[in-house]
Length: 476
Ligand code: UDP
Image (cartoon, rainbow, N blue to C red; front, side, top):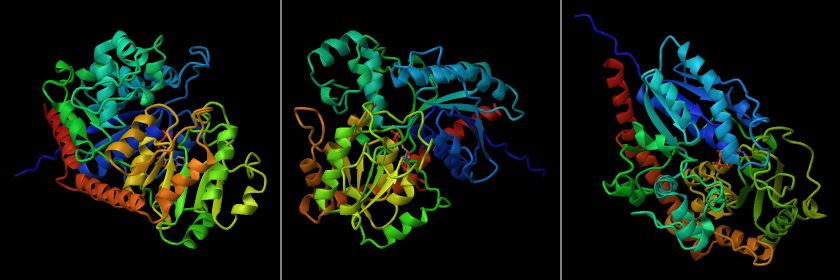
C-alpha cells in the first residue's frame, strides 16, 4: 500500500525589535522544529546591531529559516521622545507590507502566524491568507492578566482606582498590582489606551502562548482559563510553553572571562547586568561600584556609560561593543577590586556566564529572559527593575517565588545606596539562612521547569496541541 507522506505544518513567527523579544521568539521556533515537527520561518524586525548579529546564529536544521525584514525609517513618523511602546508599534506597522509580500511569495504558505505582543496588526495578513493566529506573550502570565484586565476596564477606572488613589489594581483571581510596581504607560494616563500592548485582536485569536510554565504561575494560569475571568473576555486557549531560553552551546565564553571564572570557587561570583537596554545614572553607577567593592564578594559587571534614560541602549546595543575601559567608575576602583572583580564593557555572553559553576548570584534588571536564565541555572537574584514590566517581575521573584531580594531606594533621590547594595549582595552570596533558602527554592524551580519542557510535561503538551491544530488546518 502506498504511504502518503504527512506534510509538516509551517508556522511563520514575527519578532518585534529588541533582544528581549527576538531571543524567545527564536527559541520558540527552534523548539517547534526540534520537538514538534514544524517548519518554521522567523521574520525579524531588527533595529539594533546585537539583534542583527543574532540573525546569523546557527539554526538546528533547514526546517528553521530566519528572514530579516528590510529596515524601515520611522524618524518622520514618531516623536523621538515618544515612549518605547509607541516606537515599537510604529516600527511593526511599517514592516507589515514587506511581511505580506514575503508570505505571499512563499511556495509553502504558512499554516499559522505567531506574533509577539507588538505584532497583532499583522493578523490582517493572517486573515487574508487563511492562517491560524497566535499571540506569544514573551513575559509572564501575570503580565498578560494585568494587560487584559486593564484593557477591559478602560482608562477611567485605571485612573480613578489605581493611579489617582494609588491603591493596588485588583485582577480577578490573580495577584494585585501595587501602584509602585505599575508600568510607566499606566501612569502616563493621557496616553493610556488599554489596547496598546495587545489590541482587541488578542482575545479573538486561536491561542495565547506564554513564556512561562504552569507550575510556576499556576494560580494566574488557572485564572486566565477560568470561565469567569473578566466575564469571559478571554475566550482563547492559554498555552504556557516555557521556559524558552537561549542554550547556544556553540557560543563560547571569551578566553579571558573563562580563565577568570574557572579560577573562582563554586557559586562565589555575582553577575551584574541590566539587560540589553538598561542603563544607570552616573550617580547610581558610582554607588553600585562602591557597593560591590564594600561587599568584598567576587563579581562580573557588565557596565554601560551613564544615562539619565534607563532605556539608554535599547536601539543601539551592539554598537561599539568592547570599547576601552570605562572612565566613569570611581577613581582607583579597578586597582582596589582587581582580585575580586571583572568588568566587561557594554555586552557579555550572559547565558554562558550564568551557566558557569562559579556563578552563584545575579544582580538583574529582571527582564523576563534574564529571570528565566537565572532560574534555569539555579541562581538566586537581586531584583533591580528599571522599566516596562520589570517591577512586576521583581514583585513575583521576591513575593511569590522566593528567589530574590529587592533593594530599597533612598527616599531623597530614588537611588540604591552603596550600603544597601553591599547588604543585598552579602545576603545572597554569603552562606546564611535567607540566602540558603533562596538557593534551594531556585533549584526546585529549575527542576519543575525541566519537567514542564520534557515529553508529556505541561509546556511540551501545549505545543503538541498547537501542532495538532495546525495539522488539522493543513489537512482541511
Ligand atoms: N543579554 C546578553 N548580554 C548582555 C545583556 C543581555 O546576552 O550583556 C541577553 C540576555 O541573556 C537575555 C537578553 O539579552 O537573553 C535580554 O532579555 P531580557 O528580557 O532579560 O531583558 P531586556 O533586554 O529585554 O530588557
